[in-house]
Length: 101
Image 1 (cartoon, rainbow, N blue to C red):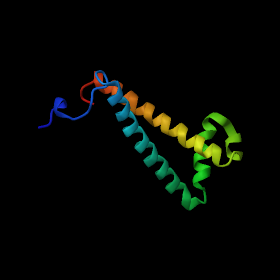
Image 2: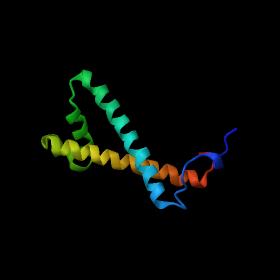
Image 3: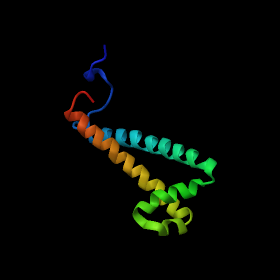
């Protein structure tokens, strides 16, 4: 039986640098998988990857994001990666207080 103490995850409470690396190691791949799924989902409908990422950028920039080309698509990707790192950080924060997670 595996116990929580035997898992090889660094505690964010004791090791801030290790905690940050786990946030990035969890958030960036999660964002890439989700964005890859979204791009794959919309591709058969004729929606380009740039357009999907511009849709994410439109959360902040509004409809102008669709006229911005590749720079707004890159902004959308960075915005989504940051959001997923925040989701991983929130999960890690809650998991430290609620041991079942």
